[in-house]
Image (cartoon, rainbow, N blue to C red):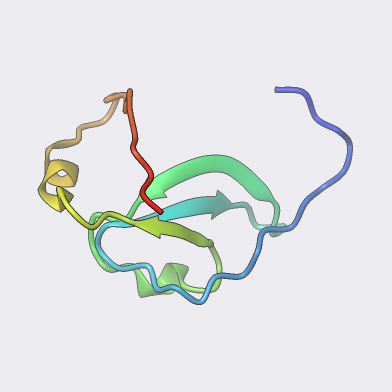
Length: 79
């Protein structure tokens, strides 16, 4: 990916990192690392460090079946 030379700091999220939360990885300098992750368990140590962008409402059991190397091919975002 091309870089613009400008850093963008992530927005602070007040949503907690609970099971099923969709988070955005942030590096030690507070910059976006460009990786999304799902919380498989509650992770309060991530609160206020990594923004929460959303929450899985249905199908959380599918997260339990994900294994290293799986590719998510389709996501539906509901308003």
